[in-house]
Length: 358
Image (cartoon, rainbow, N blue to C red):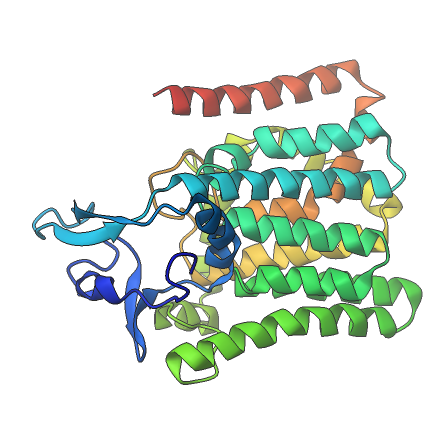
């Protein structure tokens, strides 16, 4: 996008062959030529950083990770550094907006800043989303911005921000749905839902237009495999239950295993729920729906090459303000609980430090 003003990867035709798909990358053939299989949002977020860096890709021999029998192929390989900078700033911005959203609930500055810091370094936001230009950094940025704008009652702009998330991960539309319906229910008026929905619809329309231009049909799936749609439509709810359990408790990628302090927040969520603003409840419900859709469509592990979990990150961002409001209820009443919480946070951070040191 930055260097050649196109999403078509003409030099990557060989990389779309069966021996190289999922082996050296996720490149697929389209009616217009080789492209990334992913929606354009993450690439668009990173493109300005590559434009500023002005560092054209250099050709090199690329070998696969999953098919050692496939010979290396010569491809233009861009530097990862501009993407890493984009990802880091996306995560920093996301956690900043989470902190501002917490502050908008009437919470104290220490709680708001603590929520942003714990969200950034106590979860895999740091070792995963900020380490490279995954979809999770930009997706979380737009979700957090949308949540903050909802907190400021800028509902159309809130939906527009979540529209950026839809361009990154389409099922993040659930966050806009949650915010719009929750605020509309609270106010007993349909207008908030219309405002959020119309803003987010711009992002959805942009995604559909992009996919129509690239694939010749109106589709949300784009370059993804049909298996994701088939999994979503499948009546296999037992598979979903297994995926949810794995996403929460798997020893290698489980949310409550890698970031166990979240358990203490979840068990005190009921008091926070009663006091929380409607927009924060709606964002959290939208985040949960997003994660359920993800776990219905795909495996919970998220592949390899990273530490801990990655799929729950956008859901954690959406639920960040509500989770932060669960902290004061018991932390003020029990010194043991408060100390235990911070020990668990430190434990998560140490795990990430050990990963990077190795």
